[in-house]
Amino acid sequence: MMKIIFIASGITLLAGSFLLVSNAAATDDYDVKAFGPKSPIVWTKPAKTSFEHRPHTDVAGLECKACHGEIFAMQRGVAQKTGKFTMASLADGMFCGACHDGKRAFASDTKCAACHKIPDDPIVWTKPVKAVVFFHETHGEKSDLKCVSCHDGTFPMQVGVAEKSSNFTMKSIYEGRYCGACHDGDTAFAANTRCNTCHIGRKGYDRLMGRDPYAEKDGH
Ligand code: HEC
Ligand code: HEC
Ligand code: HEC
Ligand code: HEC
Ligand code: HEC
Ligand code: HEC
Image 1 (cartoon, rainbow, N blue to C red):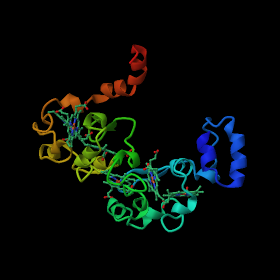
Image 2: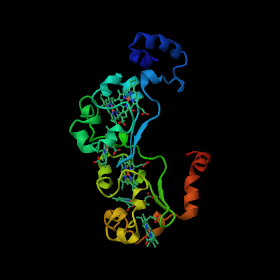
Image 3: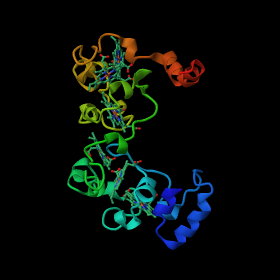
Image 4: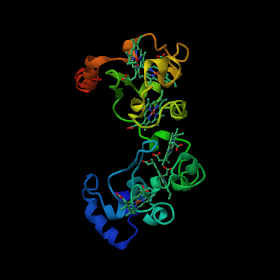
C-alpha cells in the first residue's frame, strides 16, 4: 500500500490509488499508465536479457521520461537494432549503464543474474543425442563471478545456441571446448568418464521433469 501511495505523484494517479488500496496485494491491479507495460521486455541477441518496468517505475519511483527521452525508445527492439546494445556500451554509460553504474543503481558488472535470469528448468539438449543435462545450480548459480567462467566465450547466454553448432560433440569436448573447458579431470570430472552424469537419457529426463511432485510428497 505504501508503495502505491509513494509513487503516485500525479493527482489523478493518487485518486486512482485509493481504489487500489483495498486490495493492493492482488496482482491484477496492474496500472499500465503508471507502471509501464506489464510483460517483461526480453532481448535474445546475443544474450538473453530481461527488463521489467514495475521495479523501475512503481518501486524505484522513476518517471517514464527518465528513460524515454534520450536513453530508450518507447518500442521494444529498438535498442537491439542499434547494434550497440552490449555490455561494453553499458560500461561506457549507455542504455542501462546510464544508471547501472554502481551509483544510481547497482553496477552492470555485478549481479549478472538480475538482468540475465537463469532459467527455472535445467537446460537439456536433445541433439545429436537425447538427453544431456546441465544445471546452473551445481555450477555456481549463487556466485556472480562465475558467470564469466562460461559466458565469456565458452557458451552464449541463450539456450539452444550451442546445439545449433555442428561441433557441439564429444570430439570438441575432449579437445577442451564447451563442457570440456572444465570437464578434463582437473577442474571437474573428465568427460570420458561418468557418461551417465551428463547423459541422463530419456528415462532420466522424464524423472527429472516430474521431480517436483515427488519432492513435495516426501516433504522436502
Ligand atoms: C528504467 C527505464 C525505463 C523507464 C523508467 C520506463 N521505461 Fe518503458 N521501456 C524501457 C525499455 C528498456 C524499453 C524497451 C526499449 C527497446 O527494446 O529498445 C521500454 C519500452 C516501453 C514501451 C514499448 C513496449 C512494447 O511492447 O513495444 C512502452 C509502451 C513503454 N516502455 C512505456 C513506459 C511508460 C508508460 C513508462 C512510465 C510509466 C515507462 N515506459 C518507463 C525502459 C523504461
Ligand atoms: C543492468 C543489467 C545487466 C547486468 C547487471 C548485466 N548485464 Fe549483460 N547484458 C545486458 C544487456 C541489456 C545486454 C545487451 C542485450 C542482449 O544481448 O540481450 C547484455 C549483454 C550481455 C552479453 C552479450 C555479449 C556482450 O558483451 O554484450 C553477455 C555475454 C553478458 N551480457 C554477460 C553479463 C555478465 C557476465 C554479467 C555480470 C558480470 C552481466 N552481463 C550483467 C544487461 C545486463
Ligand atoms: C534511469 C535509470 C535506470 C535505467 C536506464 C535502468 N535502470 Fe534498472 N534500476 C534503476 C534503479 C534506480 C533501480 C533500483 C535500485 C537498484 O536496484 O540498484 C533499478 C533496478 C533494476 C533491477 C532490479 C529490479 C528488482 O526487481 O529489484 C534490474 C534487474 C534492472 N534494474 C535492470 C535494468 C536493465 C536490464 C536496464 C536496461 C534495459 C535498466 N535496468 C535500466 C535505474 C535504472
Ligand atoms: C559452467 C558453465 C556456466 C556457468 C558458470 C553459467 N552458465 Fe549460464 N548457461 C550455460 C549454458 C551451457 C547455457 C546454455 C547455452 C546453450 O544452450 O547454447 C547457459 C544459458 C544461460 C542463459 C540463457 C537462458 C535462456 O533462457 O535462454 C542465461 C540467462 C544464463 N545462462 C545466465 C547465467 C548467469 C547469470 C550465470 C552466473 C550466475 C551463469 N549463467 C553461469 C552455462 C553456464
Ligand atoms: C560433461 C558432460 C558429458 C559427459 C561426461 C559425456 N558427454 Fe557425451 N555429450 C555431451 C554433450 C554436451 C553432447 C552434445 C549435446 C547432445 O548431443 O545432446 C554430447 C554428445 C554425445 C554424443 C553424440 C555424438 C558425438 O559424438 O558427440 C555421444 C555418442 C556421446 N555424447 C557419448 C558419450 C559417452 C559414451 C560418454 C562417456 C564416455 C559421454 N558422452 C560423456 C556431454 C557429455
Ligand atoms: C567453467 C567450468 C565448467 C564448465 C564449462 C562445465 N562444467 Fe560441469 N561442472 C564443473 C564443476 C566444477 C563441477 C563440480 C565438480 C565435479 O563434479 O567434478 C561440475 C559438475 C557437473 C555435473 C555434476 C553435477 C550435476 O549438476 O549433476 C554435471 C552433470 C555437469 N557438470 C555437466 C556439465 C555439462 C553438460 C557441461 C557443458 C554443457 C558442463 N558441465 C560445463 C565445471 C564446469
